[in-house]
Each structure stands twice: as structure tokens, then as C-alpha cells.
Length: 440
Image 1: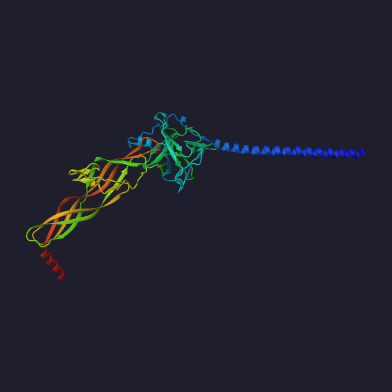
Image 2: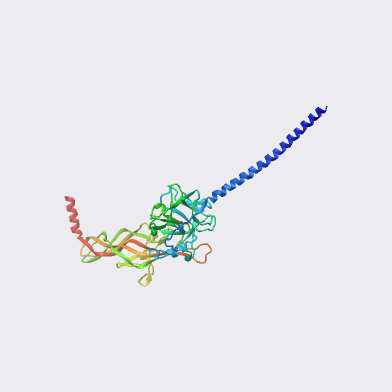
């Protein structure tokens, strides 16, 4: 009996022990499961942090003893005297960045993906940027900011790929690698965008061959850098969305006026019965086309608020250039000589026009009159300055941009290039000639 009791007690102890172990095991499993969950989340977070931390700013300017000259935003007076004031006028106005060519076909726009992420190419212009201009004493020509994140563009790299420098939107105001210069291209509105802290040398043995790397789009869609050599993939249009109103187009008082071959107008007339000498008038008309073309200079390309707006054109009187503006005919102001108007466009715009002249003729008998008239026609090149304005938000004053340019036009006039050629044929003689022609 004792043996059975001890056996039962032993079995009971084993069961209790097993249950205890089971309970402990369950608790441990729960703890392990909890720990695994915590570890997994921590691991995911650490990986995310690791990915973020794998991006770093890059600047090598301190490695170079001879550095390129740092310029402020006002250093192009020789090619554009309004460059400084115009760039200041467009500060903090949003624009898209559009590459002139290269990269990925159909994806010309630079696009943001987020902070601490590289720029990529896109088919859409939805990503906007803006310029910040610091005092010249800062030595920074421009800062370029993402409009979506209000953070600067910088030169950076992935630490696991340090030889591939890219353009990033940073996540702070650290601009140690975010100094940029905009170099005007020969294509209006396009710029080379130089990073001022990423330098290279064309010749390692020549300390004077130091250059700044410029942004270049790649065929894989990345936005990296290269030495600027005027390639399409290295030039970018600042495509502004805010439109400026034309305030004034002011022409210089002198222009280059060249007389062209005259317009030839043929006209005919017939007198009625006349007795002795008589004066009659021949009316001559010819449809012609004037032309107008504005060639604007300057670095920026600014959109107009009203592209259909029409403007008065220059005129030619007595071979002299007359700019649109205050002009009097007799005792009264007269603006009709500057009509018809033409739009402000760089493509040649044609203006239909009818030239009408009268030719007085003296005859002694009933006659057929044939007249050849020669009217003056001019080619004109006139320099001008256009002023455009924009009111930004609640700012008290308009922002103003100015551009110089040259207007090219063809102007047809009713001034005589030389005396009319008048042939009078007595009607009797004319009728005889017609009769003879019919008999033949």
C-alpha cells in the first residue's frame, strides 16, 4: 500500500512539475514572442535609420588651395545689365526645373521624392523650387529650395556609393553643400547650375584647372554632376508659373533703317468725254504685309500675363524712324501711324495692310490711263527695353523685371520711291488697236 501511495505521489509530483515547466515555458514563450516583436520593430526602425544615415552631405572645397572665384548673383553686367535686379525680383517665386535635353526621353522635369531623398526625372512639372538670395558678403550666390518641403537642395552621396554624387532635398537648414550658382546658357531662360562646394580638376598637375561641378541628368533618371561643357543634359530652364504684366515697351530714339526694293503698284483708269485739257484722279491700292518680331535678350525667361496683348509699332515718316509714343499730326495727337498693333512675340508676325494712293493725271482728250507707282518699303532694326511687373502676395510694391532687346520689322509706306510712270492712250487710238488685234 505504501508503495502505491508513493507511486501516486511521485506521479503527481511529475505532473505538477510538468505543468510548472509547461507554464514556465508558456511564459517564456510569451516573453520571447514579445521580445521578438520588440526586436523586430527595433530592427525595422534601426534599418530605416540606417538607410537615412547612409546619405551624407558632400563638400571637398577645403581640399583645394586654388578655388574658383566665388561670385554674387550680380556678376553678369556685360551681357545683361538687368541681371542682378531681375534675379532679385524672382526670388522665392516658384519654378519648375526642365532639362534642355538628354536624360530620359519624355521625362524632362526634376522631381522631388521627399526630404533626405535624391531628385529624379519626371514627365510632370509638379515639383516646384525657388531661389533664396543671401547678402553678397555670404559668398553664396544662390540657395535653391524645394517648394514642397521648404528645405534646401544639397550635394550628397550614399555612403555605400561615395563616387556617385547626387542632388538631394535635405532635412535641415544645413547648407554646407547647398551653395549654387546659375550660369546663363546661350539658350534664353536656361542655366548651368554649379555647386560651389563640389570641385574637380581638369589636370591634377595644374592647380589652375580647378572647376565647379554642374548638375547633369543621367540616362538612368538620376540627377548627378559633371564638368560643364554646354551639353543639353547640363542646362535647365527655370520655368516660372507666376506671370508678369507688361508695363512698357520703350524704344530707343534711333534705329537702323534700310530702304528695300519699292513696292510696285499698277493701276488703270479711263476718262469720260472731255473737251480740252482736264485733270482726273486714278486710285491705286495694293495689299501688302508688314512684319513684327521682338528678340529679347537677358538670362531669364518670364511668362506674360496676357500673351494676346497687342502693342503699337514703330513707324517711318520721310525715311525717319518714329518710336511709338507722343506724336502729333497738325494740331492733334495722332497714334494711327503706329497701327495696326502687333503682339510681343519672338516669331515673325505678319500684319495685313492695304496701301492706297491717288495719282492726279492731266489729259487733253478721252484716254485710257495706265500708271505704275513705286512705294517705299523699309527694313527696321530698333532697340528697346521692356518693363514687366508682378505683385507677390501682400507685398506693398510691384516686383519689376527689365529686358533689353531688338525689334525687327518690315514697314510698307505710301511714300513715293520715284515718280509715277504714266501712260495715256487716246481712246480712239486704243479702240483701233483693239480692232486690229481682233482682225488678226
